[in-house]
Image (cartoon, rainbow, N blue to C red):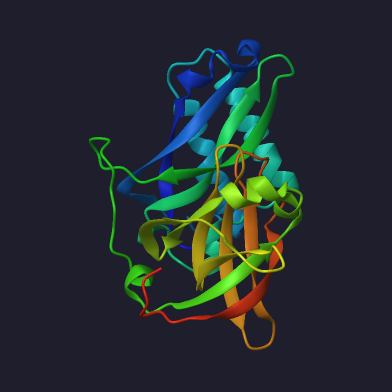
Length: 251
């Protein structure tokens, strides 16, 4: 991984009344065209990621909490965990997408503990307006397949909630939201780009999914639960398959 966005943090003022004011949330902001690269002193990818995520903390404005302590706790997190991003798992550069999955920082004022939580972040321009890019993966030919994802957080949802989940795609980017297709045996399927990154979401349940395919292992991938603590690495995902989708047909 040779490129990450230059992150700045902003205090989430909408969170001030939640949890009795016991949490301070720093949300990441990324500006199109502002990136950082590894230095020669960073011998591992995790050292580079640690700098990208933790170093901007001390420059955050609008909060009275001890930012040096947050920076220290953030760096300690990387001593015990790894952080793999969806775009990294897919093998796509950070500047080739419109939305990345990044950590937001949730600080409990009472316990003085920091948590790194997965959150989708879209690029903006210098003036704060949305920024989009026609990336190589967007233009490349994709193989669409009708698949049913299977992982614990999704499988444990009631049938009604599964039915309400809808999906959009970030690699390639498509504007149309899709609701699931229900099979005769009451399984739910979606049209996934393979390979690709998709965002499966509802108000209270959101997932980022990377879809891959190989002749040896079939359809597989990884997933991240949004608004949950960042997993140690990424979590494997298997798919049930129905049939291939003709990529010339609209989804």
